[in-house]
Length: 69
Length: 552
Image 1 (cartoon, rainbow over the protein chains, first blue to last red):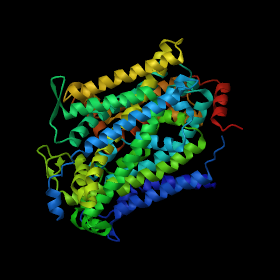
Image 2 (cartoon, rainbow over the protein chains, first blue to last red):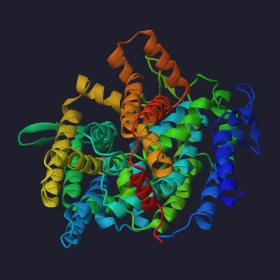
Image 3 (cartoon, chains in turn orange, cyan):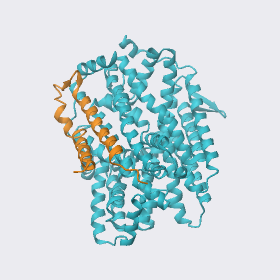
Image 4 (cartoon, each protein chain N blue to C red):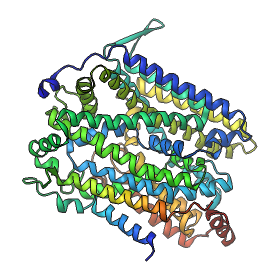
């Protein structure tokens, strides 16, 4: 697998897990919402997947996308 | 102390709003004049007016894309959603990295072929590949106009409301013997200033003012996050109170079909992001970028700076605001701030109550600066859309009707379009009130991104696959636009308040992004009709593919 396809796969996974049904797996219940390290788990989830997606773009921008014009 | 502060009346801003607003508006006009002087040396009037000579660097490109991407929606509506719905709406921020990836993956191909073939509008590229016909050019122009016009009207109106908030001590002004409310004065003044700098400087002026507006806006978004962290005694105090005082509904994702459910969030991030990044004003920014490196670096800036300003800025304001200000329920069941204001005013309340406490005397200046920044958000979206509307009207409507028109003539017609569009938008915003016209435009505004998303299937086809036909593109676009029209709020105007079709589209809207629903109908029609109709010649397709590739 090329680096481009690995980054694409991670990015798509982040898109599905981050805002999608993945979020419902970690947020807890209405009666007992999950709190991790004193912070609502859902907020940490937003931050985590933002870092993953931005990381994919930065890595692609420096290693995969070519300025060939 | 905190509760006392929360209940206190916001301090008077004195003369600062006038000074900062005057400085800001003069700055905008100065940038317009400088860009006019620069463009006088241009060899190609039209390319210079609409694309700044295709030479915009990374700072201007990244900030103009960002400033065009977010409107008053970013700084008012999103914190309001978080105030009402808790953390789940924060997941919408993950649409930003998707848009950032598209800036390079779609935008760079659009830029490359646009530069080689001299395109100015999206329709130039699409008709060049599929073959020109009044149908396809009109549909592409219509898709753009359905996005652009509601945005211009709503941003002009929002500007007026903000002026009303900024000068809340002044009830009305008297001009030429007539009393004018501050809201109407704001609409008039902002429309006039925006119109003047767009007319005189074109894309260069719009982009340079976007840089100024973008910097003010991004700073304001982060500063407001700092204010709310301070108000709740630092990050640990903030999260401790959020975790302990807010109910479970605000800390979890709602089950479908509840508001901000996981499927809605996912499809919004995947499709609405792309819809916003291929709308006409952004598409023209890709043409205007200097080179590939510019868009690559813009993608990095967009994927990092903008989400940071949301996740660590305005979103924290919405969530912390819920701790600071206990909402009340209005008679119609909607949530309101304690003083009865709409929830999208939460950021304004937080900065007005806490900035003077945090920053002392300078806090009042910062409050005025942020209120001007909110105005900047509206203006930066309105100016880009006015400019794009002018390009679409002259290139896609006027030029085909008058093929012998020269570049200078078309540029002047474009300026005339800007004047007319601004006057009509201001007129609707001022006299509209709850009129039928404004209600209809509000309905279109609610679906603007979904209309823009209908460009996605043909854009992806001509950039990557080149399997579609002109008839397929027409069928796809028409199907997509018609599908979107069936969804509320527009569907209610077309189909009436009841009916099984409207019930079905309302259910779908609660579950998925409307643009995606349109794209499904669009893609099906595009693929099926393309299968049975004639595609562009093989030689033409190969030549197009060659121009999409980097030069040897």
